[in-house]
Image (cartoon, rainbow, N blue to C red):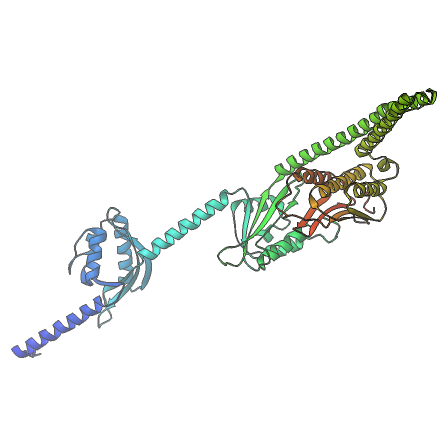
Length: 506
């Protein structure tokens, strides 16, 4: 077959056309932003590459490349070289690959790439090489590594905290937990372990934990209401302590729900084991109870001694003075006046002794009961201070002598503080007794104070009242507003062993 011979002019035109096509292909290789393109033949030799690829190979391997250079000779790391050859071979076998890979000399530069491997076919459908499209993802990968390290750092911090921690979303779904949370519930502290795992509803778990009978512990109900308030934005945080007893030991925890910051929806739930703290508090409370009981016994002893010994001695001495007055002649006016003065002094001393005895231990408290003793104390307070004091007593008296003593002392200390600091004009004392609780309420219309600023000098009095209330198994609360007075409330539940009334139907 005869071949057409090109004229010199045609040959030049053909050569020019080839140059233009080559330049055009070169511009295609160089044009993509952020993408590096190169191609190899079946022996891994370069057939084309973008300029930036040559620069990159120089940066990460320290070698120069040219058309015909074998890429495997440039890659000096054995692991990287084998990995690259495996990818080239897969593409030369007809596969299309997409891989995220790390390459580079550790002494120069390690980089991350997203590589697309595509086989090159000729007109007959034979694979004659491979084209690789490379995208540098080093910055993205480093950010992912930093983020992963940051997440691990945060998780390490959370796992090191002495608390069981979970993060929930705005619907109460558990998003994340720390190791202590997992360990705690794996030990069987949750009735249904799956209810405390990631993806479970913490709110549903709280709902299921609410007892059917209303007179049982309502910690689950309180925690559910508090967490909902935080999730709904009505509170920034909620905290409460609750019992979580195991079969072999008693445990208490402090639960805190805190709203997520930076306008994120959800909350952090933490449970801190406060068992040892509760034990210390219980020991302190037992000691306080013992101290108060001992103090009351000593008050009774001192009052009895004053009444029986000094009081009776003064009374007998008064009788002797009166008899001496009767036996003294009327003309001894000076002596009679002295005797009369002595008798008045003795009567004053007797009255003082009686007042001290009454303050130490009111006879009414033992003889008639708490209600009468409080009535007497209010009358005595009004007479001494000029402040109106009213008592509203409903439901009967307190039948427990120790309870009566503690409540009387609380009333006594409250009136003492009101007289000293409140600048009040009236006081109202209410006592209510029903089948569920005994409630004592002391209100005044005085100057009040900020809840976090206890008036100077009254702190120990308030602490004493709180300790007396807690010794009865009661709750003690004090509410006060500036210029709107103060309310002290003691709520004593019935049916508890430490309560003033063990009868559940008191």
